[in-house]
Length: 454
Image 1 (tube, rainbow, N blue to C red):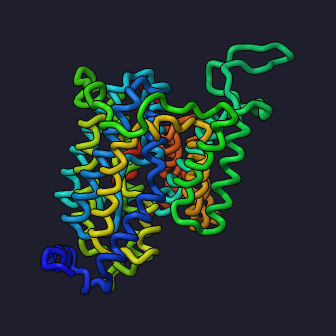
Image 2: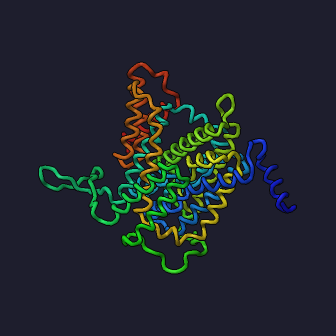
């Protein structure tokens, strides 16, 4: 090894304490690439979802990659953990389908909410409030939020794939009437190319997952995209496949300050914050437990730094032009490959930076190719249902309402509202009020007030 190479290894050893964590440079780098492969689908899916709100696809692509780079670098150097970050699934769906479509707000309004959430997140991380909020929310509701978001994401994937179709009319006594209360879901035309390609994609990705192929979601998208070429679904890019990253000018710093003190902004910011809190902390606990990083008290030693890295990523992402950045559960793939330090995350950051020059390739990926990833990520998020107490109905009913109201109301926020309010009410009327934390009482009253007065 050259003196320069030895110097680099020495720097990495000193910075990331590789020997102390029983790992080496090669293991960490391979783990980082593996993590990237399992979460790279976000580069195609996130611009696809946010562009539906009216945002520029190319700008969101660049913002997605850059925010992932920033957040991963922060995690690597501040916390030295192998946890990768990027704009999160579920949160981007809430951005587009609830805030923009459901509430009729502009995407600039939604970006402003993400920025405010990130700033609040930073403050909560500094003052350890985030952990206190986490501890006040019932275990079963935490798990139910993940499951509900999984169903919501899967529904979006099925719609994007045209496997199911939605309409604003319903049949009453043989007559089509306007259904102003929500969406009617029916089976799509499975003879057309788009749903056929999506079903093929589900089978391909499912096969890769069953065979435990690293990067199954990513490779599933790539293979499905190629299969879509002769089917006429995938449109090949015009011009070079490699180029400078798309400009951020259409999405960066596009904020809307006129409604920041409105009740709707408060609800949206809280919803972003709530989902991000439990998604991030749940991921940190799950992945660190798998890597045996928790101490004898079940605590993660540098959880504050990890949460702060997440918060900085969200704030930077909002300014660049993307939805909430969060810690990815796919980090567990890198941990399974032996990743134990921030060098794994730094490698993932490098891969996201490299991906910036491949924008034309990601732009050719059709919705039918990314839909299988959405549907199967929904499956991944369903696993906490096994941990929900279904025998105690004061726990099971709120959890159930949280889960089903997210896809049925087409809103993550409404699922949270139904779950929290029903939890407090059921606990109080059954004499189990001691199970309810003061924070839960406050939140439930706020949600009830919203229903009554808005």
